[in-house]
Image (cartoon, rainbow, N blue to C red; front, side):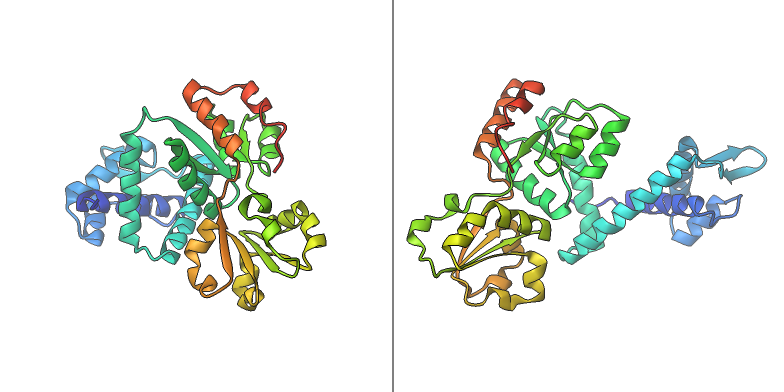
Length: 317
């Protein structure tokens, strides 16, 4: 999808003016002619932006005074813009690190909005997690397995959103996030994110002197994985868990390993790191077939209630 040039210029001018208004970086009176000259656009393009900002309360149009800036905007609106700008910058940084240009990112976002507007009847879930990478990996996996639209939300964003307006969409999350959501009276279906190594490989075929390394996205996950598989320490003299950051800082940690367990999305992004290494065994973000089955049931029922949550009480992260 290619962005319409007029739309792109309108959006650019609108964002720039809002940024200047909230930063008190503009004189009280502004002229459309000056803005048009500065951005090298048609005067009608600027007038359309002025109309939008006037309807949103950023500008005030007066017959004799012309267009003036409304500096009496609410503190909430100023704070919301700061948060939006922060998230835009983070999103831009992540996109550039993945090799996308600014125009490609803009085109991709526009395409996402078009898809969103055209799929209002599609079955949907919120996916809540604490990390952008985990959200992306979980979204891809769940959309493939459930054939449903997954809306990713960071934990703090989900709490802020649902505190302002109720949503009928079911929430899928991890057992780590579940207690926080419960504190805010939010129902959610948790999925296990830590697979049992015994389910990934037949350990009866692995000698006791084998060097086994498990890699996780974060240090916290590495610690949990180690606790969950502490019994393997007794059988294998060299059983280690590392975070991705650990092995990026010191790739030699992977030397002489016989088996390396790594999340699939981590492996796909860092294949050079694992090139010519031991036997690589990848695992999904979610390793919870019973949980996936429950989500399919919810999709079939097109609803969510407390009984669904109770079905998950026997599972542990």
